[in-house]
Image (cartoon, rainbow, N blue to C red; front, side, top):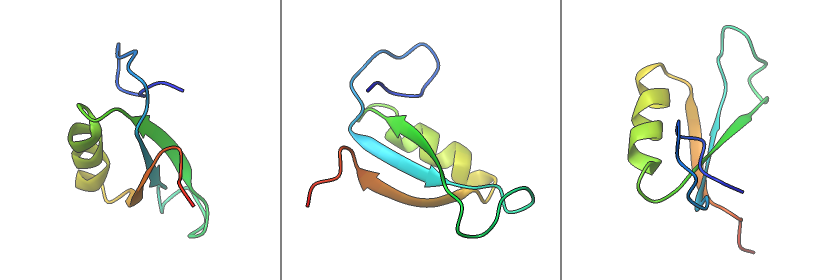
Length: 62
């Protein structure tokens, strides 16, 4: 799986779980994947809009 940042082909290391409260039920989550380089940028983008709910390691380790 690769990073969701435009043009990035790096392997994903993070799962950014988000939803748009105007469109989605509170429990619903969409996922963007991020490499280490784009984690902060994508988190800031979603956070500025109030969409970011959680960031977890990808793949999740038990």
